[in-house]
Amino acid sequence: MAVPIWNESFSVKVKRCDEDHKKLLDIIQRLHDSVIARHGEIDTKAILAELVDYTETHFKTEEGMLEQTKFPGLERHCQQHETFKAKLEELKQSMEYAPGDTPMAILQYLKNWLVRHIKMVDCQYSAHLNANGIH
Ligand SMILES: [Fe+2]
Image (cartoon, rainbow, N blue to C red; front, side, top):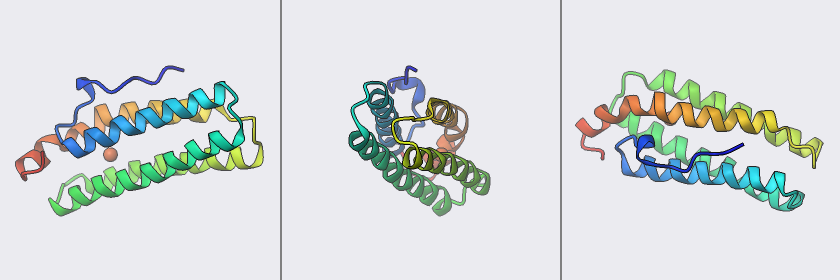
């Protein structure tokens, strides 16, 4: 499973979000590599915890900007974030109860979700945030 490295085609024209997206793609790649290399439960769990934390922080930042600027699609956008968080929780639970047996399908889902979300959903707020002075 190859996780794309952030490039300009991922840009949502808001620096802080671009930085966060780079970091999230990087963490998912490291999580995947750790699982494949069987680096051991502790390493993999630490990276998963990092992904959970960073996701939480990033979604809060993004939702805060959308709320502050009264983005019309805010509610739907937040619902999408909840879907990702629920899937992440599912992964966390699976790894908790069956360590060493990471469900790659969920990891793959998270990767695909993130790539699609950045390119097709997040990019919908670019013009709105830029027009509100957020770049
Ligand atoms: Fe988003």
